[in-house]
Length: 126
Image (cartoon, rainbow, N blue to C red; front, side):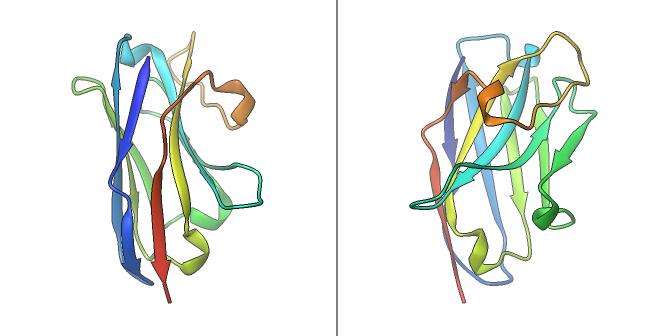
């Protein structure tokens, strides 16, 4: 499956952005999805994940209550709604996919993911 992320940009602290990830070339509903972020000089960091069915989600502690992952299997898209953004959320955000045998399994380790999108830059100004 190929992934294309979009929706990044510049936003003031406290603002919101919605990232989207469009998938093609595979059966999207067979894949669990994740969002990761990376800043220069740091390891790629898990942000959140969603199961194949969309019924199970999991988030990095620092984004819980502010970020929400959702998916639309009919449209082959997964979204990351980011509210109450903070300067420390500034990073390149990437979506990733992993084929999942079970409908409610989520994956939090970056090494579990086999397919990656190109990333979209989110900059939060103070």
